[in-house]
Amino acid sequence: MRLSAILSLVVMLVACDAARGPVTLHPADRPPERLSDWGIVFADGKTFELNADVVPYDLNTPLFSDYALKMRTVWMPPGMSASYMAEGVLDFPVGTIISKTFHYEKSGHQKNGSLTVVKADRESALNEDAELDLSDYVLIETRLLVHYEDGWTALPYVWNETQTDASLEIAGDDRQLGLVAGTDTLDIVYVVPDKNQCGGCHVTDHGAKDLQPIGPKAWQLNRDYSWWGNDATQLENWSGRGLLRGFDGDAPAGVRWSPPGQATLEQRVRAYLDVNCAHCHNPAGAADTSALHLNLDAPVDRLYGICKTPVAVGRGSGDRPFDIYPGRPQDSILVYRMQHSDPAIAMPELGRSAVHTEGVTAVSDWIAALNGDCR
Image 1 (cartoon, rainbow, N blue to C red):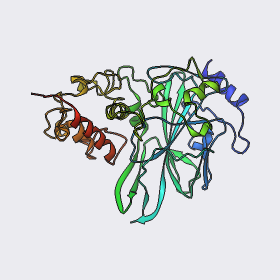
Image 2: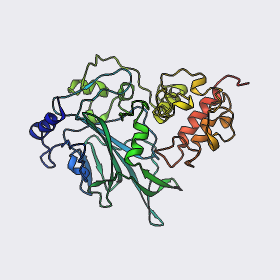
Image 3: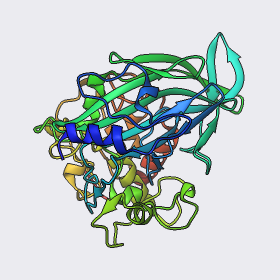
Image 4: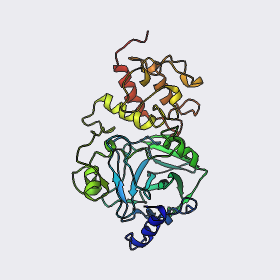
């Protein structure tokens, strides 16, 4: 089905949310300035909610983003569905809109005029009604990935102070935030990526140059989600609702980053590195010249960083000899770069200003437990 037909179908057939109106797929060359014009999510300063035709979802192991909470959603044109893929991202139809809204719990404190928020120890604050009470939470940004006939495009929207709408910010934005944990406050500059920076992560195949979703893979969606009101996995619920075809009930096991659950330390760390690093550090990714492959299906060998000397990292090596030095996390470049927020050293390069303490601890513990000698 061509995009022109899909646009007509959206306008004519999509069921309307009586209070808000339908989801609207806009032409690629004319994205609206207001997020609300898409009809995906809405806020009135009091409540954040989803269009009735939008489906929220969650991941087993999410990308770390400065301790922000995230609301993820997907919408597909009426009568259309994604194709199941056991490996890689599900194959979504043209016309799909994926959204991710970054938000924080309010701390109730002010510090030098900056917004102070709670340093989240969880990933999602969505209740079973798919709403957020904005007296408790503050919306920062919503990112859209929209699938057109010629590929995906990324659009960053930044929420206004009144929390009633978000505006398109192609050049990105930043916010001064104080992350509160107990009696401690960490001051950061929260960075909303510009349109090109979105491609820095979402172009997972550097040769093809095409943007792709990163999160909605079978192993990531293979978990329950309270919004559905049952104990089935999201894959099963999507299939039952007609949003997913080709799924026979057999899916790769999901690895929950936190809480650990049944996963081993190595499984958790490998899932974490896949999500936070492998969009660049894979054989076809933007960091392919580093010869460091951190994708989940890569063997744990030299190309995974074990006793691997750096190709060219400058200050980023910290004079450490190997990417991963078994038994010696303090001498591993991977840990050194995770521990830094300096843009010239930090990894990942985009998407965070804060150090993910819990991630550093888990990766360090895993490396400390590795056997081997790099001599």
